[in-house]
Length: 310
Ligand code: COA
Ligand code: ZN
Image (tube, rainbow, N blue to C red; front, side, top):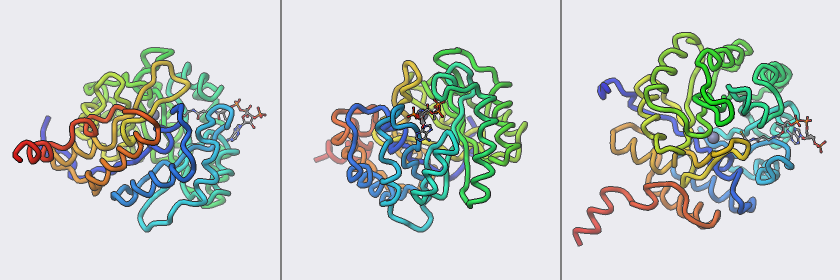
């Protein structure tokens, strides 16, 4: 790895309110969800995925996203986005006052069918009406591609398949595209190669990455993404997270761990780690029990040294 070529800054997108909470047994109240979002913003987080506008039968934890969005504090420079799959979701997001939505499709057929009852090709084709509506109503769209690095149902996902879905999105005018490793099947070598190659093949798209730490490779994958020039990464408070429609899914990379790695390696996030640790503790209190964040267990290096010196 050539450390001199690593980006100096990273944009961290907090997906805890959506990916983090969507499969938690303990359903948080709107006040609790709002408090956690406020703490993330107060800590310096600039992008928050606040929830999803999906069928409440499929994901009951997200049924109150409409109401939550109406209560979000409007802070200069902070972007709130909502996850959607269809026009119904987009219209709900608009009515709730959101200005940005993330369409979601899976790169693999098996997960796409399990998650949204459509093949990737059918799903992308169905997005056309969303793009038209969003353009007419001044709503920005981005997209996430689940199972981009491996699928718990189909196994290996060919790179050509990932490129093909991303190309369709880009041709529809959706330029901000996040490749997601929904069940932690990616490895650093694969991430580096995929991201170098896909940026060459679709140069006008702005790619981000979304990792789950299921097999302990989450932060290694972030480093591989950074080396390939990617500067936008999702993470979830306390390491909560997982897709209920992906067998074996587990937590996202923990936002505290990501910020800590950036602080230790000199990559700027603009986020206050101490405030984020407070937020992480609050998340664990509300969901009931410990989650996968390493930093919440171990504390910062500097804290442990200060404690042992006394
Ligand atoms: N908001 C609320 N309800 C919605 C909805 C939305 N955006 N989209 C669909 N629905 C409802 C429909 O009204 C219908 O309800 P009914 O059974 O009471 O009539 C039901 O969902 C099925 O709708 P349909 O249009 O036939 O879609 P579908 O069965 O193909 O479902 C999804 C597709 C993706 C909309 C649905 O399965 C879903 O919301 N899944 C959640 C996926 C998810 O969030 N995964 C985790 C994140 S990756
Ligand atoms: Zn995820």
